[in-house]
Length: 333
Image (cartoon, rainbow, N blue to C red; front, side):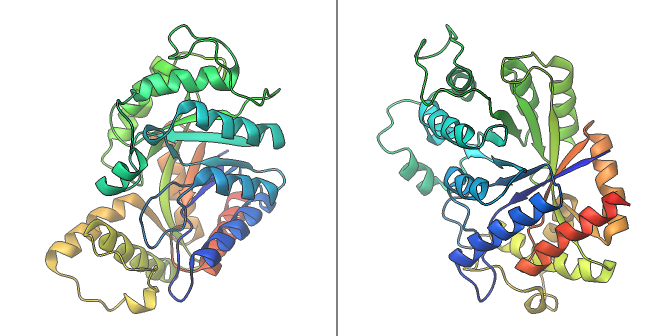
């Protein structure tokens, strides 16, 4: 049995705005909860006009308050910008309010451009390694002193009776080894890097995992973009909108909103742009429900997991809601 989870970017659709995008994320989380998806995560992106998801912790608190059973998490908090102590305080506060429902996904990427990175890190005199921050974070979350910590014996409040799950995000070859050595759960971003490096990285994680207090057994996922519709033709139309959005992002021509696929389906792309679009199709699953189910099952098998996180980063709130309904139906059959 494959468990399904959702990662949402809070895309701002054409003729919409940031508030409506965040309310759409809330509606998507509530539907995922009703349909028994396992997790609902939100992202950290800085300075991107088409995405409203810039502060996952604050959005997580809102979503946890508006759902009942689904696990709420970050995909992820970009740890290089922050104090591990401050991150732990916020996550422990959420875990205290919503015990057994909080996931902390953390990553090494900047989540924005160089200027944004500088603005987020102003005043810092020295950098702390990702591995060191992971160790400190685990100590802060569990209350178990680690002599390797930068501040041994320091425990953030509140003191909690349950533990959040700690996930390390990977998009390259080394992420699995780091997650294994530090004893965290591991998710590979196939939607960022579909080259095959993630399979080896995941195998490294599973073969070398060292149990920790917060993660006693290895636990891994894979994440991928998704365009699903009742028909293959409908899914392809949604995917064309995705193709255009991703092309604009990667070429530095981001628009202030996510353009409707009706406005992009007849767009004339250069040969070079067509090649980029073709390559990016490796990052997304496209099809009708049965086609999508088969692709998800194959991806899960490649990554040795029983859980897949899906990013329905397509135009339109109703299309994203329909995606969850179609997934729930086909995986129940």
